[in-house]
Length: 124
Image (cartoon, rainbow, N blue to C red; front, side, top):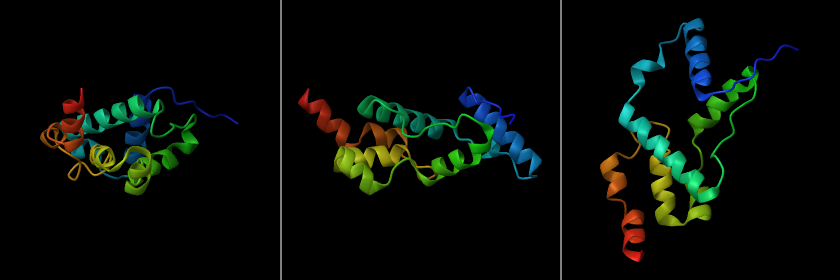
């Protein structure tokens, strides 16, 4: 069996764009919002710092790419899972930063003024 290994996030994006082009769907480049993508990245970084693992596992071969992208589009974790892992305030922050829909994702102003960050700042 000839399976191509995926080695970088850039390759995942490239493969998705090729798949979109081949299936004659519009390019996702039009939907890209850089500041919103930065919030997503910060959410992933915060998740990694708190749990010592990534919120999802990237596939090692192309055949599993669709399932991986579907997993991301469903959300990294549910509000219920987040509350169990992190508590109410942090769960709200994590879910807001890791919201799949960029139009619903927290803005930097929302993140900066979030109650969890203010609470942690006062305690230190």
